[in-house]
Image 1 (tube, rainbow, N blue to C red):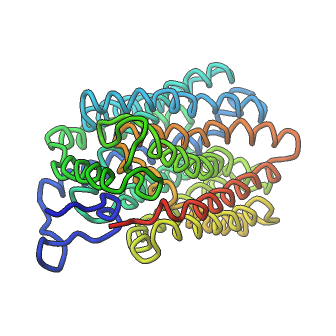
Image 2 (cartoon, rainbow, N blue to C red):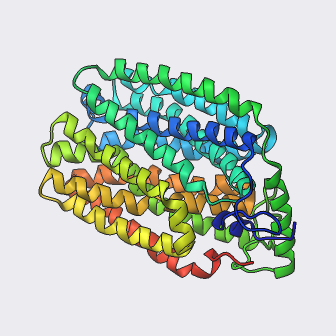
Length: 434
């Protein structure tokens, strides 16, 4: 097989050598894709189930907006701290075993927050939950990057669509149960359902071998980088270390991975803000009832799902750079509407537009980082990316105390615009080159 750019592999439909059309589907790869999709859906389901009960747990602990923001820091702090470690664990033990182990811990830990008696205790419990959340994200994304290369199709957004679909289902179910079950019962049932998914999907994932095509593509990318020499556009050369799935991050590769992580940070700030504060915004700023308030995150997750299900076609049509720029700009407009809307329904419409805009930014940036440097690249970009979730709850919590929650949420629009500008500046580095 002639040398090709791995990024081009992701952005272009796979072809049979010497002929047109997509390669025949491998049943083993289909099973692997289904198992990975289940773990992405589990991640979104469990996370959304927790966030829709935040108002109840806030009332239960008697926390102020700023105290709640500090407690919510536990989720992101646990995730960020564990991400670099998870990248190393994936290299040592493999992406699949780490994904399964982290998924089991994530499912079990979601029941903990409902038993917190204070904001401090809540923060400690969320630290455990966040550690598992971060580990699942790095391990499952690393496994997905390998599978995307093997399939030779741009299917990365579809995995993140499963996360959003899980989030939509988790938020929808949480809204229906909010008036019927206590947070403790709801999150305990969610933990049981999540554990069942992790065990069933985990058996399939552990039985599957990592795709060999991903390892071949790593070697091809390194060979192409050596011919091109250093530079961000090639993104494969390295003046300070090795790149690739098992390599170290250094030189131009490291710089590009960090910039991709910064774009991810600007957008996960918005995802985290809507996860943690959209329900409270509708309930406290616009006086929506518990069920309707839970719909805020549900419609956002639905929009993210739709955007990601169509993400492969969008990237093929527009390319990475245009998708990132247009996505950031769209999210900025949508979030301005959602945060400043005078009615619940207009705010919900703004959440939908924001979700469509943000949908494919994180998958593109993390997928590209993984193609450049394997699990280490995913871990580095994810650590920065989830730093947005680290900053979001705390910043918005304090700003809400000082200026009101509606004004605090406008910072989401500001950072989405920054992401669009950064992606525009990096347009040369983000274009696929043969």
